[in-house]
Length: 329
Image (cartoon, rainbow, N blue to C red; front, side, top):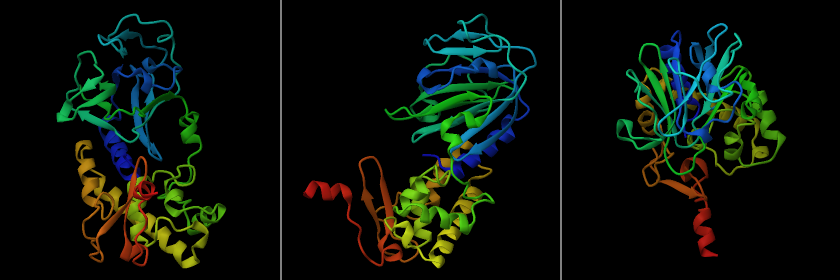
């Protein structure tokens, strides 16, 4: 799943490439991905991109609609709704006057979604299945700009969780309205982290992954942060002393800042590999810990796993693999 550093890099990439360009097509290939109906997706067509921003793991493309105009909808050959600046009449409810205020295409890539940029975006009708770049995935949305460039939002796997919203205010999206503090923002102080840790006694990894508490950290970077903080993922939050809190705060800032610096400036196509190369323990089960040389171990759950170093994080104690424990009962 793309987390704060990758999403931030994608936002900077989009901001650089798309700002100032006019949206000439917004082709929806997966109806289930679009979670809103008003304003319609067609309202983006003809509008000018004014910038890109991030809310936790959400990407936000801001578009200023063309004053006093609307966009018409059409239907692609695959049956999915499509809207294009050159398109004709469409189904009822997709056209009409568009307010002159700014609109936001807000999207979450979920676990297996990705943004695929092209300097020469296809103009053919969209089809749900995409194999661009040698990767077979389900196409959810294609956006094209006036210079011929554009991007696809795709999702691999069988679970379809990629979500698209067209809203006037990003906080209209419930998951954005309830986001916690930004870990690289000025409000994320040691005092604020102390407050979060004390509010509820829970495992540290769970707190770091809870988007309602801290925005943008997921399974991968929580492993990396806890390794840098030399702390067990299962340690309870209220057990941390003042020095532990300061150390954890520094680890959060350092790990995320380094990852953002590494990712920024890279093309979207390179971000996944850059993330994997930067991991010290996450996804490296069986390899040597780069700090102490001990083997990196794994704890598996139903739909995910975590990696850690026993020497660095648990005083040498090997944590029970929850999946194996269930098999031995």
